Length: 162
Ligand code: PNS
Image (cartoon, rainbow, N blue to C red; front, side, top):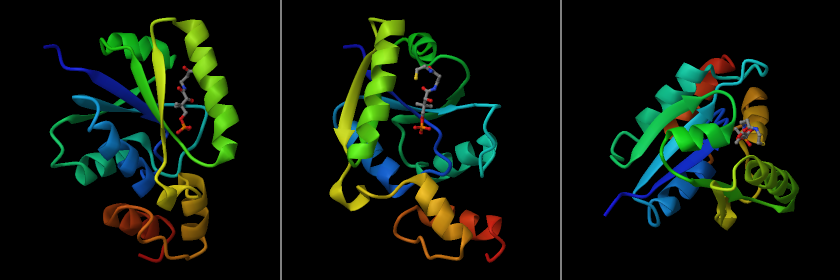
């Protein structure tokens, strides 16, 4: 039987334990997961694309069913290029809902083939995000437990107290 591939798109600046929880749970449903990082020249990330990819590869080095990739342009085009039709996204608190709904409907308008699936984030990660973690870390806050150890180390180095 053909393996079922799912695309997990995002910015991942940086990857958090919330993302890892979604990845682990998605792998219980699908055969292969592709982490697709948007390469967006309009936005200046904290971690350059290559660094984000390297961190994710390191964190998931034992996971043979995960591929780490990047894309530019429309997500639906990338999904078709990867010869699949499913996108997974995590849903946190209420504030995510509108944004995710908007994106899913736009993607549906752009391609009737591509299906968006949502997993409710584990309650432990309900209120964490890459953005708030970066803010806390930039001010010297301890974010261990919210991100993988290697990301914690990189954040400390980035903000000059590693
Ligand atoms: O982690 P993020 O920043 O919430 O991820 C957003 C992402 C990358 C999934 C979204 O911006 C995206 O898919 N961008 C690609 C451009 C696109 O297809 N736009 C039209 C549909 S919203």
